[in-house]
Image 1 (spheres, helix red, strand yellow):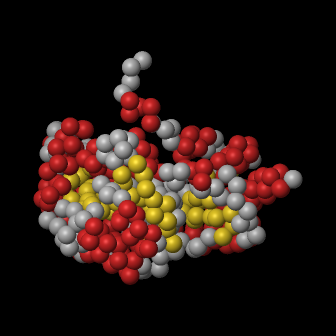
Image 2 (cartoon, rainbow, N blue to C red):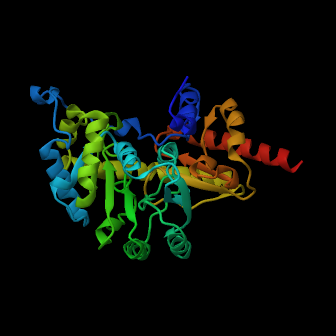
Image 3 (cartoon, one colour):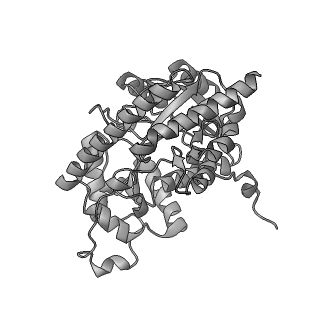
Length: 388
């Protein structure tokens, strides 16, 4: 069949394959970034106007755009509602940005590691992915400057708050320094913030886009981690020079985001009940994070190093005795445990062995200890076999 040249670059999503395997009820899964179903809020539909079933505006519902702009301004993002585009989950932002910027061979800059599905989109469009290593408080600034001096990336894609997969939160100093470098070199920033609201220590830092003075930017968020992923409602806010192009790309993709989901999101955004829900969500996930940390101490302290996440949904483990963690999957699933290997989060997976991403938000706490015990046994067995 004569498919497009692009299709040859399309990689299957390992996370989707693992999640499919993890659907078996006996499997203890640490693989996906799934919210806890117990914390999905009850929603009401009775008051939804019939008109929401009709076609809508490509930009999104005006009232929702106003509410999102007000929330963003409260965070320090300088914007008006006219800069807000409601999208089908923040995943669509990445698709639109890729269409806007990437031709085959276009250089882009990413954190290493980075969000798997972003990597998948950017590579599909043919990007040449250049990476900057992450440290505990954000990117290595010397390395970032070196990359910017040597290359001319079309954009840099960053997840500064509870990064997926590493859970890193950039320090204020690193945010300031990154913004100054992007202004200096005139590089567009795509800032992805799906986990900002899931903070366990009350800490917060204004987005990097709020610190930019010259560079173009796209800021994106979603209700998937705070309300319902099934709504598929996200948003992007863009500097005025980019907005019209992104809007036209949105129109050619799907006309508009589903209005039923937008209406539901609008019932929550900016309301007191939403703040109450977020507070409950943080408390719930903090308890799960603490239980996970305790179980990791029991079963993994001799096997791996990690930082305790201050927010988000993941632990990122670095094995003390590195191996290709993709080779552990078969044995783990045979032991009814699912996890996410670290290699696919890097553009060059074969040069980045020895990490695991473990989700703590979704697993039943009653099965947590047994699941991590089995996973640790799989790691030990593989390391012993490799050493033999």
